[in-house]
Length: 101
Image 1 (cartoon, rainbow, N blue to C red):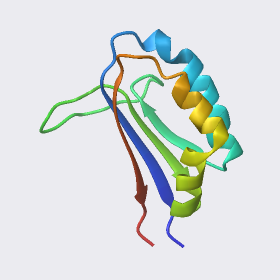
Image 2 (tube, rainbow, N blue to C red):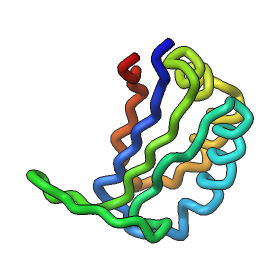
Image 3 (cartoon, rainbow, N blue to C red):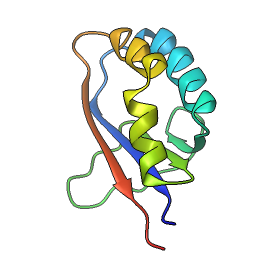
Image 4 (cartoon, one colour):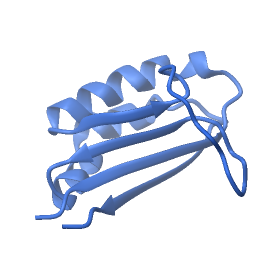
């Protein structure tokens, strides 16, 4: 069975500290749904080399055991509560993708 992934890119973040509540609630929702944080760049000290568009803002990659599990996690009550905490004014490109078997 192919894994599922959440991929979030934040092209513009005016105040990263405003994400604190969202990060906490989203982290708990992801863990409860069996997700694993693989990368959060650059806020966790990781490195990034940007090509083409050159966007070096925050990128988050989360892995689930299946695509269906990733979709269910997004639709969960816990994650929907986290989304409400996402501050206004944040631009985010969020996708759920299926991995290659």
